[in-house]
Length: 279
Image (cartoon, rainbow, N blue to C red; front, top):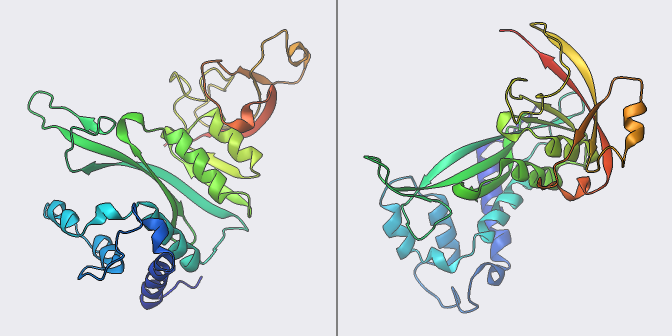
């Protein structure tokens, strides 16, 4: 597999910035922002922020660079332009392999941002936290999508669904995810988009895990096929399901659980394989 050279990636990044500059009026909060000639232009502001390190001096630099004049969508579009121009579209056995994981990010303390602020507890200093969800192209070795959420109202499941909507469907795709992203909602969403999935799930004895409540073998290792019927109705609505003689699991969607629009139907089937390996 042939990967792009560093100089090519660098050129792609600068070209992506130039793409945003062509319509910079769409990326400022006020039409007059960055309209006058100044020492620190719109392009210089973008370049400076992208090249910043993680030092504490950043707080002063951000104020000096007038980055508050620039909307976050400018950086989102630079990311999209760069990814589209740099992705080699590599596959594994004709599948595009996308892996998602999450990580917490500490940001400068700001008590006014209640959705990310955590007050002092005992000897621990107050802090603000964001949650990063990143989608990585395993074969292409490039990040293709990200969603950043305020930590107090972060939702990894919804982040996965949003990124599946934006990245699946154009070609055969395999989504790989860890336990924080497991849910019937996510699996059904990927299936309806025509994708495949490989999730590490919680132990069958753990409440809240998708394996909990399923009729699984007691062996140390197994590999079984699961037919699952997701239904928002109750027995009187889908009584024929309980007459099926072949093994089938029925999962009733709680009315308090918010499902994606794909599952706003009365019922659907979800098929997947569960395998357990003893290490």
